[in-house]
Length: 462
Image 1 (cartoon, rainbow, N blue to C red):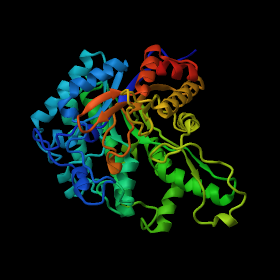
Image 2 (tube, helix red, strand yellow):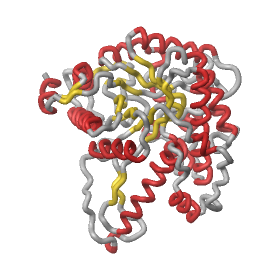
Image 3 (tube, rainbow, N blue to C red):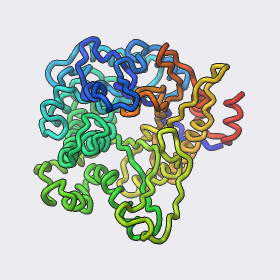
Image 4 (spheres, rainbow, N blue to C red):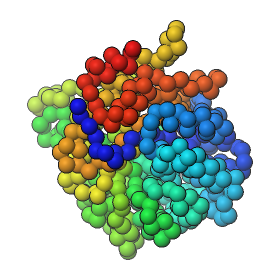
């Protein structure tokens, strides 16, 4: 029997924009994602999040699902434009009241709240005033963090400043795939810096208000390996790892921005020289403000084949084959979770690690009996639980695991075409249904242990 530590935090995770709906109710202002979803061609199925999972009106039902699941913690995000409709100024009382009630309802059920302050839904007014590429947004975020923590900090013991700054900066400003849909690498790099800088300043502000609260940041990390031992593939892996992982990890842990990646950007013309224009004196010290934990969102690894050297000229041939993939096209690679946990612990040594998101997109629908037999998701989750258990056995201080996601939801640019939930959502009726994966997770969480995988799946099917 593989057991987890006694105080291991099993949890589930969601984000406000993906589940709440009610985007124009009770004083909520528009976000950058509201505008983005309204632009033709931005979302795969042409949908938006005006209703989403209607969580805003169904909180008790969804919290009851968490209680049934047996989780000890729930990671949710606060919608910045629901609390501060224009991103600044006086708070919207109805918005703060909603999250106040949510926190109390969780605690009444014995579930610890884990608050994410920024899960991508920047108030639209702030974006129009310059957004994350503008330094002024740093102060706006700190003000928002202070408003939230003055209201909730007496009861919230875990808070995350930003979720996945790589997605906000690179996908939003560099590649144009996420809101606001720009394609400007100079603005993407400035946005990344201001996200990290606001994290450091907000960490200090949160501690001044709620000194007993754990403060950290959540990064989506991708373990990276070359497709072959060739020099070209090793160079491709270095560049990807540098831009995706080290660009955020290194400054957070006092190393500044990695010089090899700085020179990549200089060579590409993204910055004029190695003295990054958006970095001011003292910024890197603030960014490296010590945190209580690092959150890691993990979904898959990256196996890098050089795009510069033609494959026919890139010897030796590929030695790492791609495995099974989820519906969204991501490789199922639980070994990558074990690898990234060990690496972060060895190279950066955060005092504590949480797996703040892990899950898989599979569209398995209810069968004729009303049951969702999502065997692929069960295998995915079980193998990632096992990878986490091995990392803990190896000495990595993993303190919790948060399932992504509690329920199917609006999956950003994919709209409603991808289902990550362990609860099925019928978007026409808003009915929720526990999938077989939810039943499997319920037993594992309540036992705080793993047993034989096939035995677990057999029991889940009974």
